[in-house]
Image (tube, rainbow, N blue to C red; front, side, top):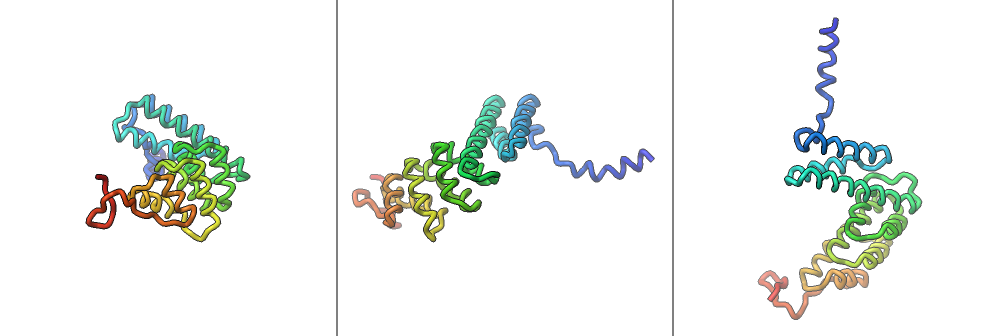
Length: 208
């Protein structure tokens, strides 16, 4: 009877997900990451991104102590992002918006700016997209206040928010600063080449 029970339980045991941290981190560090992830999950934060952060750090050979610190820092950013979105009137922020909000915070936006964008975006899909694009623009060098202003304006248009970062990069490739390229978009002006920079054979510009 015991054999039959174990045999029946075999397939169920085989279906149990393997610990993604096993063999990647020292046991003590893995336990710390699991504890941080469990605390995040209890607060309705996306814990999977914390485990993924640890896995990525381990793959790059980052010391265990730094991995744990980075995971804790991300957990704190996720909590701050969730709080900012909640303050925008969203009772239960979705995981995508929280992760995008954390990225925006890491890129330099303030909690107040994340809250303002979350409130302006309204719908769930637009909220996550707006916050993610905001983080990308800020990372490119667009001042955060200008980033929020550009996205707030763009939310009311028919354009795709995801195109904004590419358009700013195109302006930068033509010799504009990130701020100038974003300003051009806000006023409906496409990127234009810098006349002081020589052009390449492909029509772009290159540094002298």
